[in-house]
Length: 139
Length: 151
Image 1 (cartoon, one colour):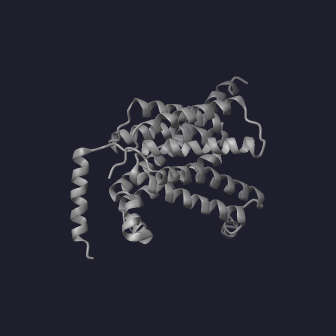
Image 2 (spheres, each protein chain N blue to C red; image 1 turned 180 degrees about the vertical axis):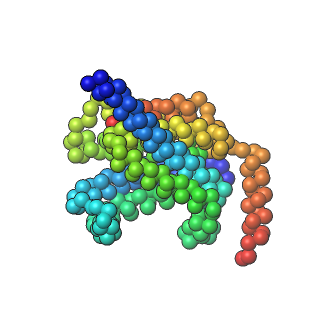
Image 3 (cartoon, helix red, strand yellow; image 1 turned 45 degrees about the horizontal axis):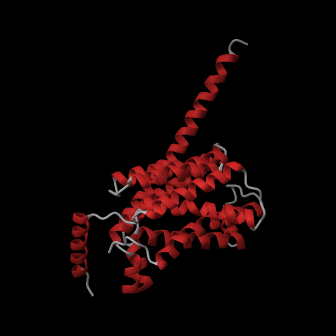
């Protein structure tokens, strides 16, 4: 009987740790994918202009010949599979809102650091409002 | 060229980004729940699932989402486009309320209000960060690349 009492927190601890690690993996992989994809599209230039200039084929060629774009898609695919893995172990009502809303905040941080985007007070406020809003809506 | 104010066409693309992703997800979810459970030992069933109407429609919508998302990222900041993506959830929630007459809890209404406020905040600001030195460099690179390309 005395052994059963300490067994409970021991069993619960790795679960919380595992859930945090799985959600963190989804959030970090999708942020990496989004930032790489955004960097690729910025380096390619305005797709509407490219399409007006060299047609839809030219626009598609411009995208699929960008190594950065493939790096982004690779990380987005990894994020998708890590989401599937997380859904295999955790509830959808936890994983979907947590990963969707946390990704908004990590993207704002990564956008400022890596893409040098001007994330002013307006965009920070928006990222936090949308983050809480997505959590409430999806929960 | 950088756009401070968006053209109607660019608003249309942002609208497609917002609408296509949640509608595509809903189609996939509806399609996957109506077919019998698929086990990993029969992967061929997954390929057959792709050709059922709801799943095919979901995939088409998600391809449309990705194309318009990439287009939006080519002329707007990531931190500008992402809230627009989240606004799609509001559209779907409102559609389910007024079209399918589903009940929306107080928490969900609060979520709808917060996302709408957030999108309103971002939409008031510029859509693209100006990098004077960087854009000069990239335009030089671009013109060099164009010259190097065979016609």
